[in-house]
Image (tube, rainbow, N blue to C red; front, side):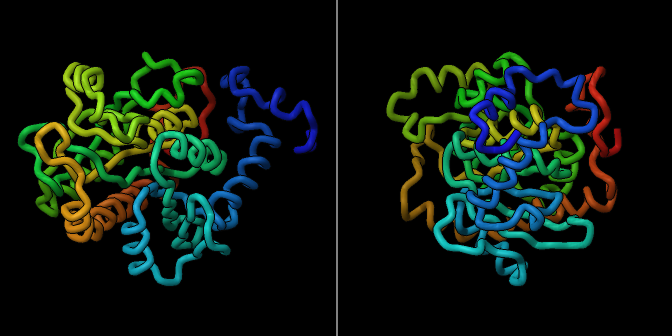
Length: 303
């Protein structure tokens, strides 16, 4: 259908998906065209510049580190785009793309809805979080092995009762890199909320945090992971503790700026190292059996 046809979105309604009938791809041609156009609109870069390994951040500091490491990367063609993207291009699109998605689960859903049509080899959330355990310190890392979806952004599209877990191979390499650098870290559930000021009325959130044994709280990770699962994209989450809201260490400007300067290089570098290990071990793509149902078609990768 033409993209200006009034019936377009009725024709593309994801509530009508029968995933077993999409033998070649998850998306109709019209959906791909829309998403490619919106990727350029939101990121300021062309769809063909996107690489197979995609990092999401919501901090300019990670962009600064990326630009220092890859000064010749492709940058947004215009200023003021909502989610600027930066592409370290390599042969066979095997390089890295970093997207500053801003704050919140709505942005996380928007960008992953559109990135999904590219079928990247991996998506990794590189963000900050509130540490929820007594013995976590500011600057410690959190490697997610599960998610509590308190953000509710995808509840109408994906049942809340279906467990979401990150890609095992990605997590194994991220864990290996954390150990190699002797970085303090926790592995556990990340609690994602849509309420930036959840601490102001925290009783329900704290109850859910305790029941889920969550080790960190943020505003994007569960959303990225859920869409990664929906769209069958291997995904992972590596966060860094910037504050401890339940232990008398809220995020305050002075302390936050000091933390950011001390953590930003190592955080991004470890994710890049882990992805290089993925490329070396699985040049054709990560195994996707954990995100593919038994009656779904193969979609590349290692099966």
